[in-house]
Length: 383
Image: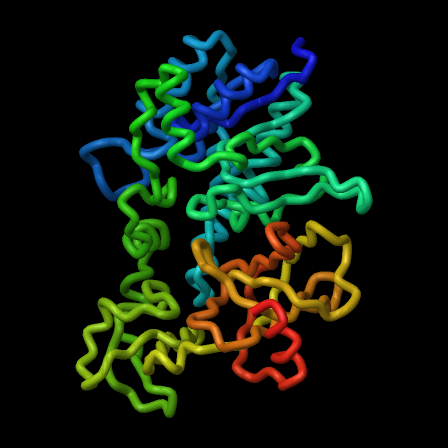
């Protein structure tokens, strides 16, 4: 047993997780590699010419080969049932409710970390590690584990990790948080990881390798396309301007694929699943300034007792903006931005930062346009 402890490393077969495993071994940790099979390629539909993504046989073989070469054990575990029961079902149900889900955050929060920690306990591992570009540390004054942005702001993945509770952060290691992506590719070459050093990053949803979520929903929900087709596109005043293919196949802010000739560019501004109606309008109609988040997780502080300024992001790769945040109830956050933001979308996450530290986050449930002048001025303090 290494003096640094035993760590279970999630290995997808990509360059980031491969470098994570080898780097920790080089640093003196007792490494155990694990690859989690989250979905069955043969039932995912879409492209059929080649398996892609973290659950492909090629990726699993790459992870195993690296572990064997560098002298640490590697396991493959099947978590398709627990993954499907939560992530895929909620992903589907969110679209059917007219919202736009983020499956990676769902997976990290509810499935991946819990699954890793269970296997870590079985294998006597004190820690788990992943290839995320983020940082975690213990704050002695607060006696809390803090999550922070990765050094490489272009690759920072703290947005996808806001839901991790304290007990999970306490056992998590993110070795790549102190490096840039070019550093990691160079490190892979230096470690002799030729199989993965130049492997491109994957941006697909792991269970939708063709990136066609509409096709996935149609395949998964019998009769969905027929049931929801022919709904109305309407303007804000209710004027019908066309028919659509079904509300689950559109997202807030979408412009392409609407096939509407209205003399100006229009965007999806509202989705009503009860009436199968989609409201469209100009870009200005997408501007919102307030939101309500639920299913919250506070990281830096156990509770936000007073209104406070923060930096709020409303989607992955969002640059963010100054805002005022306060906790209205145990599981309700209110956020008021200094200026209106484009396409705040129910179903996505709002993640709040204090400098580089994640203050907390939650799932966006409601959006609004109005904010009083006092709150807007307070939010402007960090804008």
